Amino acid sequence: MLAAMSAQARKTPVSLGTLRQKKRRGEAFAALTAYDALFAELISSSGVDVLLVGDSLGMVLQGHDSTLPVTVEDMVYHMTCVGRGNRGALIMADLPFMSYASESQSLETAAALMRAGAHVVKLEGGAWLAESTRSLTERGIPVCAHMGLTPQSINRIGGYRVQGRDPSQAQTMINEAVILEESGASIVLLECVPVELGKTIAERLEVPVIGIGAGPHTDGQIMVMHDMLGLTPSSIRVPKFVKNFLPESADGVPGAFRAYADAVREGRFPGLEHSFS
Ligand code: KIV
Image (tube, rainbow, N blue to C red; front, side, top):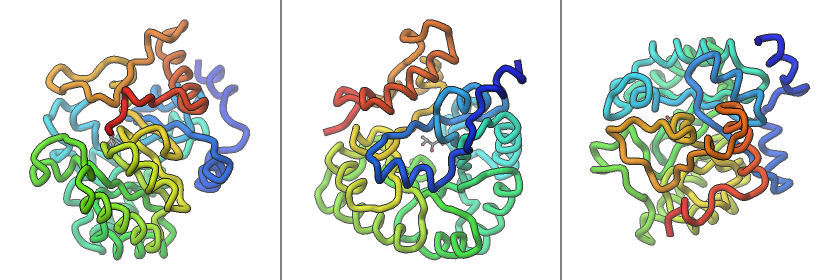
């Protein structure tokens, strides 16, 4: 099986340059979470461009009710597994809760994940990440800034709800996205924001913007793998932005990954029914 999958590996691995080029050409790209070697192999061989080793593993693998208990050691372990299975996708890895509270701590945690094979590290927050983003970028570590609904701040936010509906909150998010781009962020990821805000930020930034529940106009889309296979844990309410692609597949799980990648590339997913107004 490994040999068969390797044969489908991309000729040229996906890089940040690939994503920037896709943005310039208006070609949407697809991303999915992955936490182990087998799924990393299946997903990266199916036309999905970006794998995220997300701290959502705390909820979908470990059974926690938030991402807060996930440790750097957990992330390094899963990053290593995904790296072994990857066939040419760009790999992003989350810095878990309280592992980037200071600039020096963010360098240390990011270095551990880069040594484990990550290509980009993802941090949740706004303008307060500017210094760490600059330090990481200057030292050769590309940063994805995760904005909007930031699950590591769930206790402050008070629930998994849409962010940026209020015009002043939306303007703050736009300003902070620009600050993070100017500080060196290579990607911005927007979670659970209204369609118009997703569109404005994607148009305003030069770097690729990936959305989850951020409408159809962001440059790329991402979903948690379990959600798009209809496997959301029963303790979690299935979010509006989730679509199960398994029923569209003629050959089970690999077909579902291909159906998702095709739907994103062809602009058929997400629809307005998966978005917030
Ligand atoms: O951890 C994760 O899976 C994420 C996605 C929800 C984008 O951050």
